[in-house]
Amino acid sequence: MRIRKANTEDYKEIQKISWEELDYECTPDFVKHQLENIDDNNEAVFVADGNGAAVGFVHADIYRTLYFEGMINILGIAVSKSCQKKGYGKELMTTAENWSKEKGIKIVRLKKARSVPGIPCLYQISLKLKHLPGTGRCKKNIKIFR
Image (cartoon, rainbow, N blue to C red; front, side, top):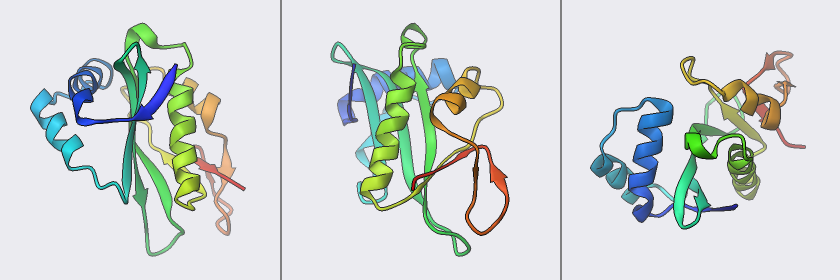
């Protein structure tokens, strides 16, 4: 298993995974355009490479607010059905978490789409229930690095 930064040649696989696993009706050309316009300073797309083809991806960006320190927002994560339950999702999240650390950001946020099966398992693997510092509130979709 190899995780690498996505490139524009991955657009067909990312589109197929987005359509089949996330039910996002996007075209290959749209995904290619989006990949060509990634803001490398503020977002990243990583793919799980299975024998030279992307079999999963994670898309993350820096999320800033006026009321809390910066976070990494997981905009999308999915693995092709044939490669699920083999650790690809966990490795993709670990890579996004490492990118977060490289950017000096201690919090990663993943918001679950209600209709996507399998995401609760990802929560258990990668994200832990944490309290946001200074708020006393728990957020199931937050991971804080110390």
